[in-house]
Length: 265
Image (tube, rainbow, N blue to C red; front, side, top):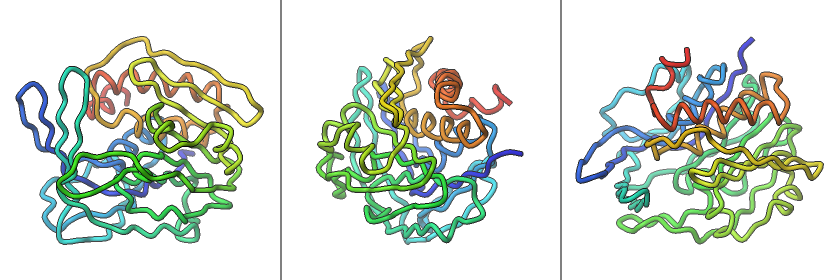
């Protein structure tokens, strides 16, 4: 039976400027993490903030959606130049209160805020949980470029508790892999851009995985990786095999982006 995974976080409108071409499209962690869940063989749901001005359709692979509505959708401008990114926050909304009791019917929960909408005090004790650090430590001021200034204080105690960050976020949050283990995270994924990622597990072992390709898609990669790995773990894969399988799926996503699901289904 497919694992049922719900993603908590904001839906956004992303204005992407790449090679002087401006594209406006829906974004946010539920879209990219939901795709990771679906491609890894799970059923994806979403608990989201969204604005009344949102004019796009949400993807069909989000089989269940619960909305907390605001007047405006969270909006960003993303400028990509020579594989470097500049992210500017235009509008912010929130909060999104996430309580473990609300998700008892789900097999796992992904906490993946975009800009501080999920409180740092959120805790999970029973339900498997995956956490992305990004939206917890961002400094989110409308009209300004996104920076990192907040310390990561989230603690978990679930049997399956997985954490994801990239190398820069780990440094900016002033936290170590061992400290994350002390906070209750049993499996940790640290991304290194085009160099792949490293898996750390509770017994002190680590595994470096390198991609076989270098794709052009540069949005949502970390969200997709965390969700696909988490879903594979919930489906019964051990950490090593889940890492290798998630790497293959992420390779496809780095090339095809949101078009990856028809290719892999």
